[in-house]
Image (cartoon, rainbow, N blue to C red; front, side, top):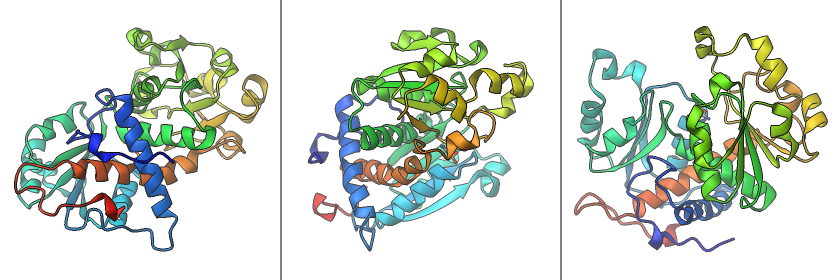
Length: 328
Ligand code: CP
């Protein structure tokens, strides 16, 4: 286990993977490893964020991200609350910035935000003094998902550098794909993306990745296959002919894996899965699926992010209780 070095951490917010360096990503992975060890203890809790208050502001549905942020906050001894759009004054037309400012007026230290608009987390970060974490903003980025994905790859395969990772599915609408591509490239992986032409952005090859519309060639040398959710809500826009057609050409099944992929290939999916569409039951629950490990690791990774953001001394008076590395 690398010795984590929070002194090299300088970011106040986590808004995207694009703006992180490989060194910063490594610091998060190193802390996540340490927090994973904390989570295995009989009492999986440390006082690192005692006295800190965190609000989870989710204006889109979430199972994994929201509950793992909530658990991460509890495991770090922070006080936290979650606010859903459906039960907040968003419903009455309050703007995002007003909502965030009102939340911060209650002496909140960090805001975790999921929003349907790209740039929402950045906008909030420009109007509040505390730290802001992007928990998914429209089709832009989902940084903590990419971090937990690469943490899981490293945990299972011992490295990221030099691995072949294929991302299959709806790349165009996927914040998970964008964050994963950034993270994997920064950490030295070879990335291939594959899906129907209509679901692959035209310029994406400029990110230094391989683009293919042929599933067999995407699977051939892959060490890791990250299968993305087909966003059924987009199907009405006719971006691919039919679900049946999609399954035929891009569905990942045990049979397809046995025919085209390496024997020990890791199968990942960020969730929620459309079982029987992008991923069959036998592939989702098969021997090499690490989908639930991804979810488990989400808590440790989010603990690492919260811990590191809190380690940045905020403007005078804002960082009300100083925490120390000894608390980890
Ligand atoms: N992976 C992911 O973001 O899942 P949720 O939408 O359930 O948070």
